[in-house]
Amino acid sequence: MSTARDPREALPTILHSPVRLAILGALRHVQAADFGDLQRGLEITTAELSRQLGVLHREELIEIRKVQRHRHTITRARLSEQGRSRFEDYLAELHRVAFGP
View 1 (cartoon, one colour):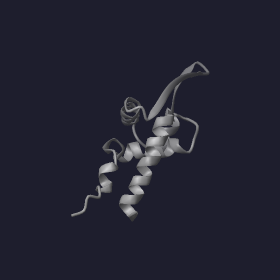
View 2 (view 1 turned 180 degrees about the vertical axis):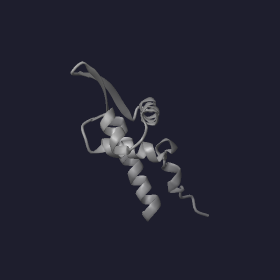
View 3 (view 1 turned 135 degrees about the vertical axis):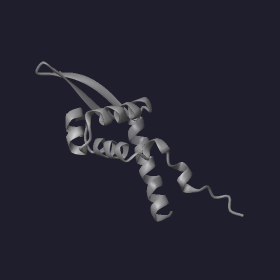
């Protein structure tokens, strides 16, 4: 009888959403990203991006900041330190699930 844990159990379900994966993947390679740039790059609606950023922010995977730029308020998102670590762990576990140990 095997006592090995199923590697799929280590995958946090909050990250399974294709949109949230795409957001985290995009933020993984930059210091921060503007809301508009994310929306255009991911080709999703304002409402959907706002909703997904809210989920990631509540889970403390990202940080959201409002900055003033030429009389406009810009929303900027970045991976939190905890978010970066959790996302890297997720990717490693996903790799193990897909390709084995």
